[in-house]
Image 1 (cartoon, rainbow, N blue to C red):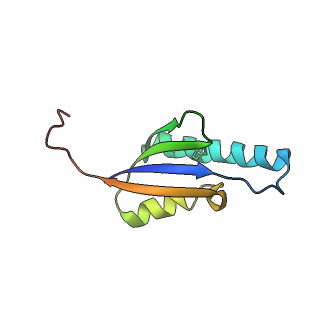
Image 2 (image 1 turned 90 degrees about the vertical axis):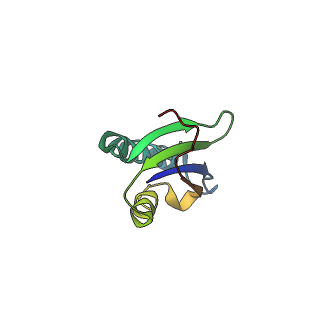
Length: 92
Ligand SMILES: O=C(O)CC1=CCC(=O)O1
């Protein structure tokens, strides 16, 4: 099952630069693991925003929720999930 997500990151003002850097490092590690497994098929920065579009290839809604809620930055992200279906005009 394919899902496109938009993740918007907003850190609370009380976090120190060191704490933000730690979140970013842990997020990179978790995200890299998901990409190597194939569960996260891609991630793209939205130009000019602390946000991304990501593509997930998972077996269920529940699996996607478990993956998304596992991001270290999850408490500081607003996530929009869009389920994807095959387009009749797709050549792939
Ligand atoms: O877009 C970001 O920098 C935050 C993020 C969410 C998943 C990821 O790999 O980075």
